[in-house]
Length: 162
Image (cartoon, rainbow, N blue to C red; front, side, top):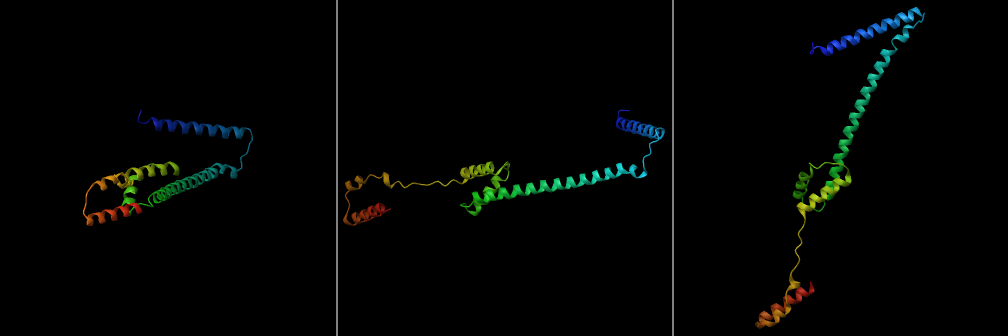
């Protein structure tokens, strides 16, 4: 009985609906109310119209979702392209793979996330020259030959020009 509960409920609903329609028909007959034959099919026509409109709505919704997904893909690609302007081709591919699983909420947050990934993986380490730290007085204390003194003076001139 529990397995057929749904079928029994449907049967009861159908029986109740049929009894209601029969009673309604008898009421119309007793009250001398005539329903033209052209009006009887109105419910069927409206039901067909509703079905058509639902299909159109579903297809339009599916198209809108597809377009939103495409827009998101294009926005992600544009942000990644902008962030990877100064990277080598191999680094660009690596960046794309690193950010492909990042969720796209909106352009601003995705841009921040991509820049964070870029900075953490591709930051350029600038090495500062340590020539400023060299004590120039040290060079004066060392005794050198004439040839070596010429080399040292040339190197000093070159570092001062830079």
